[in-house]
Every structure is written in C-alpha cells, then in structure tokens.
Length: 100
Image 1 (cartoon, rainbow, N blue to C red):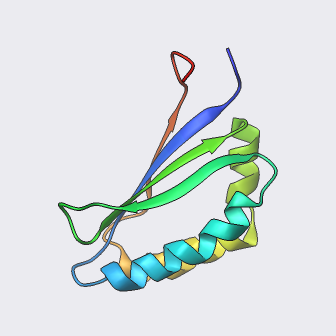
Image 2 (image 1 turned 90 degrees about the vertical axis):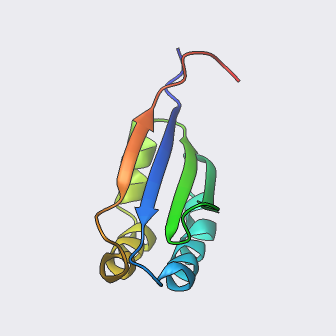
Image 3 (image 1 turned 120 degrees about the vertical axis):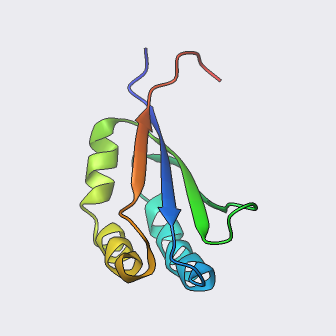
C-alpha cells in the first residue's frame, strides 16, 4: 500500500462571505501546489451551498501534509479564514483502498 493520502477539507463560511473566502483560498493554491509532497490541491465551490467550499488534495504522505500545515501560506490561510467561517476547517484524511 502506498503512503499517499487524500484530504477532503470543508470550509463553511458565514452567510455572505463566499467572495472573500474564494479570494483567500485561491491565494494559497500556487504555493501549496509548489510543495514537494503535493500531488493535487484543488478548491471547489459547493453549488448547493453558496458559502461552502471543499478542497480535494493528494499528498505523498502524512509527513508531506504535516509539512504543508507548517508553511507560512497555510498559516496565513487559517488566519484569514478565521473571521469568515462558522467553524474551523473540517479536515478528513483518507487512504485509498484501491489504486485509481
């Protein structure tokens, strides 16, 4: 079994914060994708809930994800999102049962 992990991170914004959240999320994409262990890092807007966003991520390992969480751009993301969200990021870390 590979050490690769997948992450689903849900951002639930306060009503009316969607545009501000989108800008915060997009600023974090390029530096995150440039990280050594990043295999996929894509934010999505929930079409049924205007203020909800979902990240799909793939990392080479849990260690790569942990390193990502220590980067300044990730810490900045969390700081900027804090006043815009109803709760902290809802992060699920997954291991694939089958290869793609």
